[in-house]
Length: 155
Figure 1 (cartoon, rainbow, N blue to C red):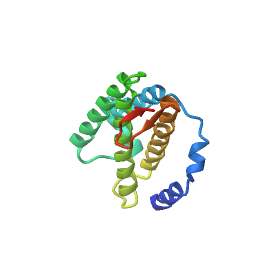
Figure 2: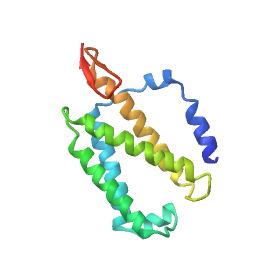
Figure 3: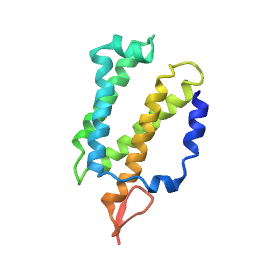
């Protein structure tokens, strides 16, 4: 299955299906996503050969190290923001990071620029985005409403 077929399948997921997902506390999503980003960043720094065995050889090692450093920093920030007061910071970082990585995966796998194994990463990024989108409802509860601008307000 190529990346276009995967993307077509993802677009067919009905919103009603997302509402049936059992929500997780945002602080837990922050910890999990932070850990995933930490692992994704540390892996190529610790053992580039095994990373390249899975995701293909890299011409620009400096770029691998740059992305690894950024993922490690973002993961650490998310981990530290995994509190009932700060989880929104972890969510902003998380959705932005996952969305960016997902876009890269779905753009460059079909072009043959990166290996098909990046589609596994794409699935993980979609899962994280869904987790963030469903987690928000549990934390906000019925007495708080989103204003649409990223700010929440009490009713």
